[in-house]
Length: 342
Ligand SMILES: [Zn+2]
Image (cartoon, rainbow, N blue to C red; front, side, top):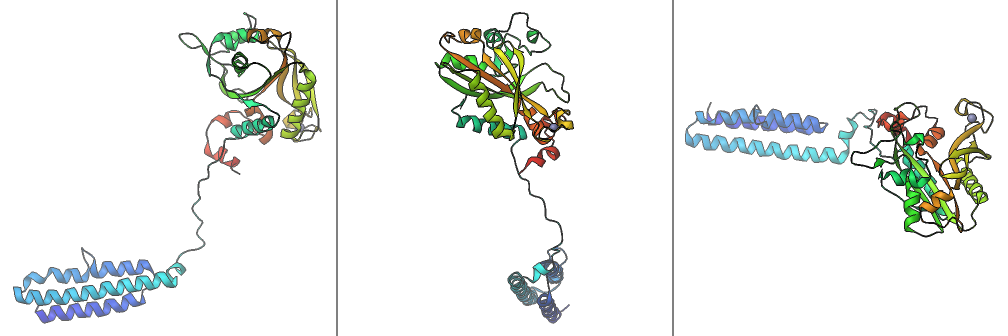
């Protein structure tokens, strides 16, 4: 090839290339043209450049200049067309607007956390503050101070996870009552949410780790009337329940003790599978704090009385959403949890 051949080929490639660039409709088309003409491996101008060593040094300089001119003309044309396409939006027309959008991930609070927060909000309005305590607890705080008789079945190895070197994982949030009363003189109104542990089989209604939320009110002359009025107010606020009922029960740390039921939120008391046809849902245990518990905590049981209640937020979340199996709440399965994003 002569210098003339090089020059005319470069000019022809530039002219043809510029024409094709001018009619390119998309950015992808432009990129394909750039590769075909200027690509480092097999672009047509690049190929031409590779043949330059066959010329004499002088001729090589002239031919090289012609190729470079063609190259910069093409580059200018590519840039100009790119800018024009971006401005006109013609490129967008080539996109498939019916293609489904990529889903964005949205974080949300766990349904049990939501329940705890809502309960806390209601009781905060009634003057309760949140108190916390250790999850690894001393046996005395977990049982002894709470009036559990020494042979109480809950203290058996099958229910309690004992730690090597003494202590245990608390089986309920009630130790927080004792720890709070040791620190602060009455009147006291606290809410204690937290995790508890029991040696339970992980089945549809039991989990070895679960959350509990407990309330305690200690004052002079506070009575069962205050307990009933406060918990009824709570049930109406939280469940929208029109009716509540208290059934006698037994706990070592309260006397008298009562389970509280609310009219089923799903069937409004008519009876449905969720409430096993009874029209009632059991939501919490409560009672007047046993004088022995007050005395263990250093509170004068002649001067002060108190009442307490405890409930399982997981159970409340299950009732609210009709969740049949507690394990679903702890499996961390995104497909299940993302239903609660709101
Ligand atoms: Zn029902």
